Amino acid sequence: MKNFDISSIFNKMADLLEIRGENPFRIRAYRKAAFNIESLGKDISLFSKEDLMNVPGIGSDLAGKIEEYLATGKIEAYERLKTQVPESLTELLGVPGLGPKTVALIYDRYRVKDIAELAKLAKEHKLLGLPGIKDKTEANIIKGIEMLQRASSRYPLGRALPVAREITAHLSEHAPVGRLDIAGSIRRWKETIGDIDIISTSRDPGAVMNTFTRMQGVREVLMKGPTKSSVVLKEGIQVDIRVVEEDSYGAALAYFTGSKAHNIRLREIAVRAGMKLNEYGIFREKDDKKLGGRTEEEIYEVLGLQYVPPELREDTGEVEAAAEYSLPRLLEPSDIRGDLHVHSDWSDGNMKLGELADVPLSMGYRYIAVTDHSKGLGVARGLNEERIMEQRKAIAALNRKLRGTRLLAGVEINIRSDGSLDFDEDVMKGFDIVVASVHSGFKQSGVRITERIVKAMRNPYVSIIGHPSGRLIGERDAYEVDMEKVIETAAETGTAIEINAYPLRLDLAEPYIRRARAKGVSLAIGTDSHNRGQFGNMAFGVSLARRGWLEKKDVLNTRDLKPLLATLSAKRRKKSS
Ligand SMILES: [Zn+2]
Ligand SMILES: [Zn+2]
Image 1: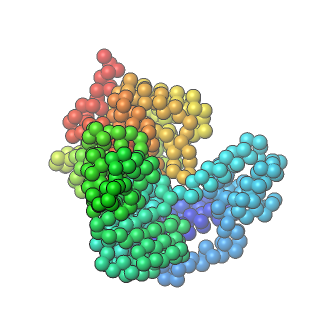
Image 2: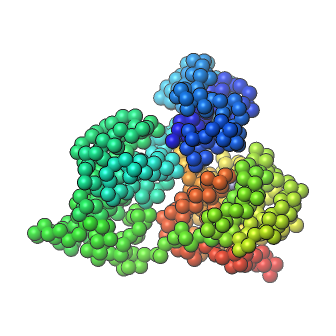
Image 3: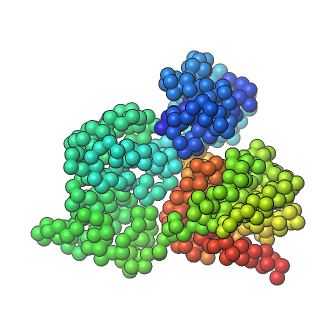
């Protein structure tokens, strides 16, 4: 899809304009368009100019630029901009904590062009003395560079998975593949991935290799063999494909799904039982008789283990549990009854309430919670008391027309920097559900930020803590919250903790999900959808919950409407008793 190309150009244009100190409205327009294009969920090259102008944030000027790109592969305005500001400077903007003004300043003084040069300057303390740069700024820049370098060798799952799916769809259509799977850490739904691994069977492996290496979007063919090839895509992701024998398919799939640590444990068990396990199958040691390998299930069975779902294969206790046949019965996508974190166009989403009213039915849900931002979040057009009351009325009117499904009247309320909330109790008690989230003051000390969240959880009307760690994968580390304390307080107060399914958040990380489960805390999966295409992100949330060993009963939104409402009001009653 061309969506990625166009949105990355728009983002780069915004970066370059920002470095030049241009009109903030123009810059924001590019960013907003980029965001909306990326989350379209449909191939933009199929859009007419009229369709384009129906995409929020795209007027005739930007629609024209998109058309220009689709027709010529270039955007003239972008080419011009690059002659004025070196494009490599946008790389510097990727350093967390380094803003465009500072980048412009450093560039004017030292003509730095890339991160390596910047790192050198920072380490030699040459940035000190530039206007606005203090010891601490310099230390933050060094820290930011390190974080960026850690992240850049891995890709967020949310970016890699759609690409992998596009490739397998292309192969299914254009190559003689039999069985075909995405293996590797994507299959385990790990939050970041190193490269994409694809396994398949075929009666004509050579044809598969040809189709694979000639795909659109391949930047470089690293290796092309008779049954195995590797390419690098334009986005920089490496993709490997292997065609294997039908008879070894399960063994290959298990081998290339990993994790390495899990596979090492399996091989040890095999050896102890006088067998050997590799990517071709499982064999009896003494005479090499093949005991299995066609399917993964066969391998686990021969080893005397319960089948381990890919999400659990991390060697964090699953092998022991599989030996006792006591793995959890993991949450399934079909267990989900609703979405508990959704934005409408009353704040920063782009769906009308009327459109949201159709979502439960189309997703097979009983309910979704409308949780727009509260007034403190000005940039997201947060709602004040008056607007919230109006919205509740509009939701109630829609609910009168719905049969069997329901919109819950909620809010994503801002946890202010002192832990107080945007609304008073008399407004709070009118909500069906309240998600409370931190959207500012990320750099507060661990103690302060933890106190802040704990204070919010003690509010009887707060149902869920939203995106509890604040991380954005590859962009922003979690704030220094003491998650252990948050989990304890959640257990004590009956507050649920969110698993935010937005692919760049995937917040909470799975070790904490397991901790929360152990403490009896309820987890609430929400997509944080801002447009229609994002409801499908529930799959990320469910898989993350599975990685955290959750069962249906551990998840708040597996409940039907009535038990859900009963659970939500239980916390409020606790307060009055
Ligand atoms: Zn939020
Ligand atoms: Zn939100």
